Length: 124
Image 1 (cartoon, rainbow, N blue to C red):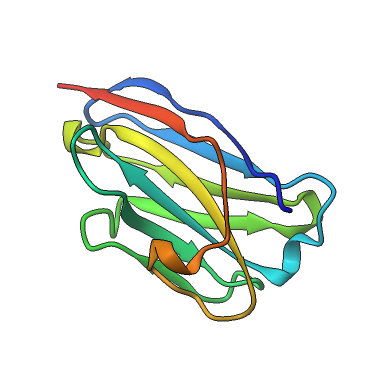
Image 2 (tube, one colour):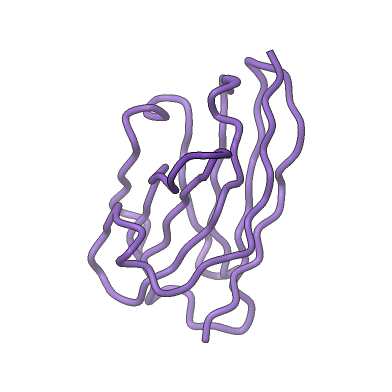
């Protein structure tokens, strides 16, 4: 079992920035592909970004491309999501997810482990 703990959510004005963190304490973090997803009220969970075990491959949803950056620090067992130029439509609960292996995937069903989520609210 992999425990994922997100932090960094909060309330920010449109155009502002937030940086989310997801820690996986006590695990061999580097063998996992990591992803960020989000879910707004009344909507399905959607892909935001994913990163390969080495950090060499990243994927982004079109809606966040150019504004969000995913990165990881395997020495600290942590993955990050830097969010810039935030918009009200970015408001959602953001989830970190992990899947063992090298395939970088955008499908929620492919991920085995999920964090509890952190709320991001962007005011207009």
